[in-house]
Amino acid sequence: MTLEAVLSKIDDSLPQALERLMALLRIPSISTDPAFKADCARAADWLVEDLKSLGFEASARPTPGHSMVVAHGGTGGPHLLFYGHYDVQPVDPLSLWDRDPFDPELQDTPKGKVIRARGASDDKGQLMTFLEALRAWKAVHGTLPCRLTIFLEGEEESGSPSLIPFLQENADELKAQIALICDTGLFQDTAPAIVTMLRGLLGEEFTIHAANKDLHSGMYGGAAQNPIRVLSRILAGLHDATGRITIPQFYDGVTELPDAIRSQWQALAFDHATFLGDVGLSVPAGEQDRTPLEMIWSRPTAEINGIWGGYTGDGFKTVLPAEAHAKVSFRLVGDQDPHAIRIQFRKWVEAQLPADCTIDWKGHGNSPAGVMSIEDPAFEAARAALGEEWGRAAAYVGCGGSIPIAGYFKTYLGMDAMLLGFGRDDDQIHSPNEKYDLECFHKGIRSWARLLEKLA
Image (cartoon, rainbow, N blue to C red; front, side):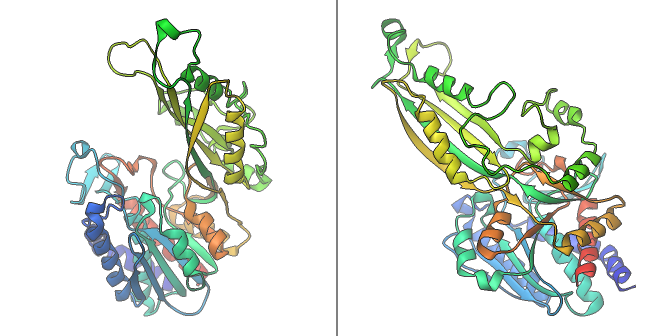
C-alpha cells in the first residue's frame, strides 16, 4: 500500500507541484545569450534550494560557462544518477508568441490543459517530474527511496561546452549504477517509450574556390570553372539511386537491429503515411530496403543542410561566382566513428575537385551514437512501471535525434543511461508557444514513483 500512498500524495499535491514548476519557468535561463547569465545562475540557485528542501546536499558548481547543479542524497539500494537541464532555448521571434514566454500559464485547449511557457517541456517540466516524485516519496516514507545523485546542466541548449571537462574532473563523484535521463517523449503522443538507440551527429561546412574574383558569365562562361557546378555535382553524388550513401567505408560500424527490437518496432504499427503526410510528403526517401522506422531510428544519414553561392538577391546578376559553400550533416548509428567519417568525407570530396579548384573546411562538432544495453534489470522494471501507469505496454524505441549526454556518460563515467520522457510531438519545443500537457506532467511524476518503487 505504500506505493498507493505515494501516488495519492502526488494526486493531492499536483496544484503545489504545478506552482513550483511555474516558479522555475518564470526564470529566463537562456544559456546561449550572455545577457541572461545572471538568470541562469538564478535558476541553478533555485534548484539547489529545492533539492535541499528534499534533504539533498546540493550546490551549484561553477564552470567557465553556467553552473552545474549537483546533489547527493538517500542511502541503500541502487545508486541512481538523474540528469536534466535547466537552461532553455532563445524565444525569438517574440512576435510569434501569444503571451510572454516567461509568464507561464495553465491553458485550456481542445486536447486538454497545457502549461504554456518556454522550457515547459524542454526540459524544466520533465526534470521536475522526477523531483516531484521524490518529494511525494519522502512525504510518505520520511526518506528518499535509495542513494541518488542529481546532475542538472545549464548549457545543454548552447552546445554543452563545459560538460566533458566537468565529467572528467568529477567522474568518481558522479558515477552511479545507471543514469536516468528525462528529455525524450511518448511514441506517437500516447505510448510510453524507453529510448535505447540515439543517433550521433557530425557537422561539416566547406567552401570551394575557383577564380580569384567573381567573373562576367558572358566573358568567362564556358571557359572558367564554376564552383557552384562543381559543388552541385559532388553533393548530388552523396547517395546512389537506392538512397545508400556512397562515401567509402561510411557503413563501417553500422549493425543490424537485434531481432527482439525489430519485433517490438514492427508491433508499434508506425503509420509512415501519416508521419510524412503531416509535413506534406508521401514517399520515404531513404534506403529503399529499410522501413521508415529503421530509416529514422537505426540507419545513418547524410543530409545537405545549406548550399549557397553567387548572387541570390532580387532580380538577376549574370555572375560566375568565385566560390560556393555547403553545410552537410551526418546522423550516425551503432559504432560509427565520427572522426573516421570526417576524414573519409573530406578525402571523398577532395578527390572530385577539378583543376583550378581548392577547398576550405570547417568542422561543426561531432558525437557518436548511443546504444543502450537492455541487459540491466532496470530497463524491464521501467517498462513495467510505464505500462502500469499509462495503461498500455511500453516499448523500446529509437530516436532519430542526438542526445550526446547519454554517450558521454558511457565514455567518461562508464555507465549506461536510460532515456524516458513524457513529452508530445506537438509540444513546440525550441519554437514559439512551447507547451507541456498537464496530463504528461502528472503521469510523468506517477511513472517515476512507480519505477522508484521497483528499483528501491
